[in-house]
Length: 252
Ligand code: NAD
Image (cartoon, rainbow, N blue to C red; front, side, top):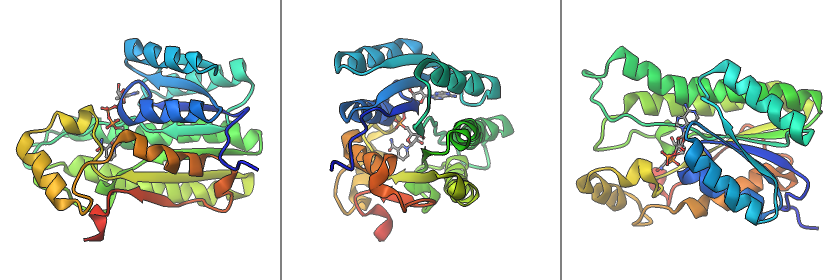
């Protein structure tokens, strides 16, 4: 029995147009799932859809700002009406702002919290409502090692606070929904080479790799197996867990 197969499963990935979301979406499709790409960047999302369809799986690009409850409800309803069910929700969209806290405006603070935390709540809630009704499903939220440690040298208090909250929100939903056969877990990547990190100044990047026992950033591909484990019955007794994938950054 292949516990990791996702044949006949349907999934969505928020922030699926780029970076970690795109790579994981392709990984889910490569293991048999139909995957909707949910993002605000429709040009990039449409390219990912083409790649998934070329693999012989169903896909669709859905324009959705995760901070809009209406967008999120419409997105989930569309998947259920077109594909009949929602098995896997990967709530991954997120942003980071690097501003010293004494200079951070309240609008900047709210923007980070709105996308990274409120967006994860809204998408988890919409997916959870469907999954409770269908008596099963898996929700995976992207937190970060920044929910466990304070990154240096860059200042990012709103990001760190948002990710710590995602980890606790995940545990709370896991406990509330365990008897509905809905599992809720999070992943906490360390530094992963995507637009978010590669656009940083060289001094920051070399500091990050020096601080990482693995001596390098992770590749987005190195998160696929972690998501596959959480996405299906291989992890049937695992819920409320935060899976850290960080090259041992948080060990020291
Ligand atoms: P990225 O910037 O490469 O991709 C983010 C995607 O999210 C983009 O496609 C963007 O269009 C989309 N997005 C942004 N705001 C949105 C919104 N309001 N609604 C819908 N989609 C939106 O970033 P990434 O590095 O792939 O990060 C993905 C997730 O992983 C984020 O939650 C991030 O915090 C987390 N993370 C990243 C790292 C890292 O080192 N790259 C480490 C830990 C956690």
